[in-house]
Amino acid sequence: MQKMNTYFEVNPDKEVERNKKEKKILNSNVSTKENMNIPVVFHVVYNSSEQNISDAQILSQLDVMNDDFNRTNSDAFMVPSDFDSVVASLQLNFCLAQRTPDGNPTNGIIRTQTNISDFDLYDTTIHYSSLGGSQSWDTEKYLNIWVTKLSGGILGWAQFPAAGNINTDGIVIDYKNFGTNGTATSPYHLGRTVTHELGHYFNLFHIWGDNNCGDDLVNDTPTQQEANFGCKIHPSISCSNNGDMFMNFMDYTNDSCMNSFTIGQRDRVFNSIYTYRLSLLSSDGCTPVTTNTADASIEITYPIGSLSACNNPIYPKVLITNNSSANLYTAVVKYKANSSAYQHQLYSGNLSQGQSDTLLLSAIPIGGNNHFLDVELIQVNGSMDSDTSNNSDTELFNTTGGTSVNINIITDNYGNETSWYFYDYNNTLLDFDDNLNNNTHYTHNYCLNNECYKIIVFDTEGDGFCCDYGQGSISINKELHNTEIAQLSYFNYSDTIEFCISALNKTELTIKSNYFYPNPTKGIIYLNPIRFSEDIPIIAKVFDLGGRLVLSKKIKEKSINLSKFENGIYLLELQQRDKITKNKIILNKP
Image (cartoon, rainbow, N blue to C red; front, top):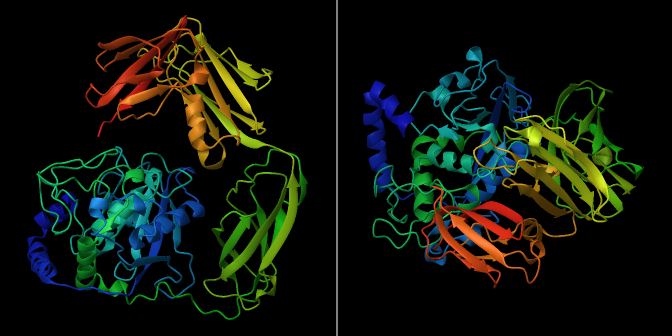
């Protein structure tokens, strides 16, 4: 909204023109039973190697776009039953552009290195190659999405239709709030920032209308007072409604808590496309360039045979060879290990006839000892291969190694007081460190078997990770997708983190590593029996964020009722004999 309003302050004639079209949209009733196909070009503008996100991360975002706009997202069922009658598919399909505006083959991904460290809100330099950004493709024929590092915690922005310069039309997203893997960071790690901004691109307003009990110009979305953040519990009532539609993609809730558009939003998007963005539908950007001479082959070079090193996840390698007299620029590889779902990865290069190049595929998790890997070339230079006889390969391999795990230790202002010891399930010491520096991030990689382990951390002064002495923490993460297994961010003299590899499901792992669950809680929390001795009393103390003691009691029934307190964040202290633990807890009552 701010970007649009600023544009209209300088171009009041454009505002008058748009307002006329908006009146027509409000009175229109365009609907279709056919899906619309829209070509997308992703501009990755990076200053560091981390910001140069992978093809796999881009493809994961494309999957989210197609799922969210077709209501095939796996969390669609989580909409409250009150809204079942109004949620809808928007019937929009997105494809990676297959041809450039000049008609040449492309994979739809443009990578540009820049000397600009980050971009401010609505910074138009990102849209121009001459200024350190990436030049937009014909914005009337392609949906342009720029991915980069944004300043000040900005998630992204979009240009509303007919509300800005034609060269800046599209959306801009921070690289940490994009896709579902790689640099994607919780709580905006499921690709919904792009879904939200695409709503604006197609002329949807925030569900609260950007005003107190405002109007989003959609009839079937409930009026709500303001933006919702985090995760809410239905019904969350405001403006005399029966509950905010906080799970709508046009609210501000966490990615994991939004899942729906409505029929009214679909109709507004249809009307807006036919009013403002009709040329997208006639674009040939999704149509591959016909090159009957394209001919490439693929061969697995890794893994083959027996592997003994740490091999979960596995990182396959394939050799792509150009057999055609025409140069090979792009290829799409489909692959899977065992019964896993197929993954897709793009190859970009410039191979003349007879030349080969190795492509490192994204990681695949594996379990057990005997495996097979399938790979297939499904597209070459944006079209079908003229000779498909050498477009696939399969290899059998076996493994005896374990799972790659990273242990991250971040010390506080007094790192020299901290030490840690890493044990396996037989209490065999695997590693330790008692010589740590202040405010330092240590990462230790281990190849672990499918067993249980523990880390014991000590602080000589009894003020471990706590007490405004810095932001210390320990986390255990699987290498694949950086999945967190367990973590510790608060302790005094000593604490223990217990975790298992592959032996437990994610929920059980969370419960096993914590002293209590669930967190957040709706009111009742339960103490984890494996963390406390039987028949020894436990003293529980609850403090608010101001440090005031609001509850102190002796626990016998292994549960604590916090229902009488207001929603918010509290500090829970549990003491059994001389062992004291402190953890933050979030109270979120219905």
